[in-house]
Structure formats: structure tokens, C-alpha cells
Image 1 (cartoon, rainbow, N blue to C red):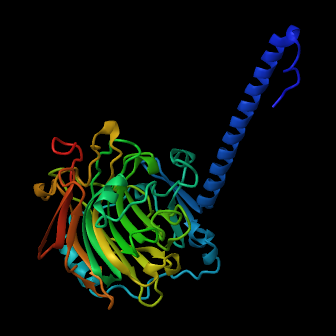
Image 2 (cartoon, rainbow, N blue to C red):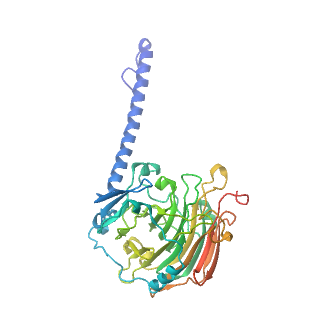
Image 3 (spheres, one colour):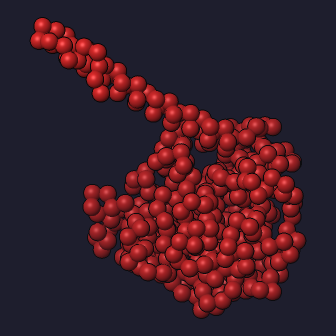
Length: 417
């Protein structure tokens, strides 16, 4: 590129050089400003897509704003296939044995917990609570496109351990496979694990999986997580995730893309759970059930004994449109290997399973839903962990807790470097 004055004779060469430099700097600044403006525009467009008009807004003590959005205006209905969708306000069927199970749970449960924003109000009927996305939330992501999505593909845990290690994710899980599954249930001990790096997370969840463990994996996930990158803090939060292509282009956390249709006005996806368990102190847990409605075919989610939250329409999936081929329960962390060593990000309570109740985190009353829509104990329960010196898992069973396991660990320690 040649600018006027850049090829003058020697008398004006110094001045011309200065003018050239100024012109180049101006062009560079303009380009940077243009890129910055484009990014700001993209961020604002995305915020407008996610943050729907609110009937009422509630400020949570943790700084979140919960918007009460009309059910028919929620993010799910941005999906082209859902434009004329008739919302199913209740499942056609619950799994058989659920209500008997709830009675047992009432006798054996530890203290119940709720969501922090409830302290300052509730959403009206015919609305759903949506955690408002802030500009900073999106700017923490690597790009607008990747906001609300898992950054790395999570290779399923009981697949190839070498691949699992390469992904930077580590797990301590129990699992079943080799049959057709139509749902899963668990009661999960709630903690607030410490996270070493902001780009790491720690979660405890169940996975409902279908397909091969290549690029066509279908997954529905629900549980609790601590994720500074996603939420901007270290609070323990209720979350869901779904994908139909192994975390590549489809799916997201919570309501951060169109997909999950929420019908419940009480529980906000991505909102803080309170209180959480303490070492040798009160223990708190949450119950999560995901099951396939035998009539409509949608995958429903229930939180606790009382809150049917909503459903993932079956058309979102390929394999899961029929059934799941594997169920997993347990913990997952991101190990970014800061300073070339294993992360000290905790899984569960940060204690190993052998420390037991009040110290180690647990999953209890784990069950699967069979082809007759019955809740059943899992048969042939296996366990998997990449490095048991960092995070481990131990299973057991008894009358009150049914099939259960303790799991987790501190990450970096003298035996885990």
C-alpha cells in the first residue's frame, strides 16, 4: 500500500516518513476499533437473544438477577423446530415406584435445601425464572459462540482412559451399560469444592448417554457445579447440559441456547443452591430424576420430590430419541495442569471416599428407569477413575441408601503430582 507523500524526494523524506507512520497507526487503530465494535455488537445481540422481557425481576443475595419470563417467551422457542410447539405442561407418566421411593426418601433424607434467590421473592405462575446473563459472563468465554458450552469435548469416562486424560477432564464415577435405559435417578450430596484456576470447574452429576463415543454422542446431564468461568463466582449451582454431537456444535448449559423447555416457576437453572454441606457438620443433598416419557418421548427432569422442571424434546437427539445405552453418576473436574502439576481443584468435598459420611461426598439411592417405566436398582454397576490417587470412588449398598457410592478427592497431594 502506498500513501500520498511516501515516495517524495530527500528534502521531505523525514516529514513523509512521519506521515506514513501516522497513517499506518491510524489504520491499525481503526481496524482494532472496528473489531472491538463488532465484538461489542455481537455480545449485545447475544444478550438480547438470551435475556427475554421479564414480568418481574428478583435480585438474589449472591448478585444474580432472576428474571421471571413468560413460559411462551423462553429461549427454547428461538429454535426453528419449536415455533409451533404446544408446550406439554406435565409428563404423561412418571416412572413407577417413584412415589414409594419418595416416601422412603422422606424418612432417610438429610436437610433439604433451596435456591438462594428465593430469599427475595418468587416468580408468578405462567412464568419461569431465568438467571440473567450479564455482559461480563459472555466476555469471560473464549468467544460469543462458545459461551455456555463446554470448552473441550468430554470423552465419556468409561471409554478410552488415554483419550479421557488428553481431554483435561478427570472423573470418579459409577456406571451401567449393556442395556436400554429410559432414565436415571440419584440423590447427590451438595458441597462447595475449591477451584484452583478460573478456567477449571468441579461438578457432580448424572449422565444419560446414547450413541458411540465418537462424534455422534448424545448426552443429557444434570447436577451441581462450581464454575468460575461460566458464572463469575465460586458458588455451587444447579445445572443441566445437553448435546447431540459430542459437545461440538449442539447443546449448552441450562437455558443458554434453545432446547430445554422449562415449565416450572420455582427453580432457576444455573442459580445458587443454599445451604451446602460442611465437614463434620450438617449434610445437604438434592435429588435429580431424568426420564423418558413413554407416550410423548420427551426427556423430563425432576428436582427434589416436588419440582418437575421441564423437558428436552426428543427431536433434539438421534440415539436418545429411542433410549440411552449408558448411565453414569459421579464427579468431574477440569485439570489444566497449572505450573505443569496436577490441579488442586477439589472433587465433591475434596476428601477421599474412605473418609465416609460427613467428610466424603456421596450419591445415594441411585436407580435407572427400565423399558416398562419402572425405577430399578442398577445391575452390574462398574466404577471408573483416571487417577485414583487424585480422585477415587467406592460403592456400597444398604437398606436406607439403596445403591450408593462415596467419591471425590483433593486433586494435587503427595501421591498425585
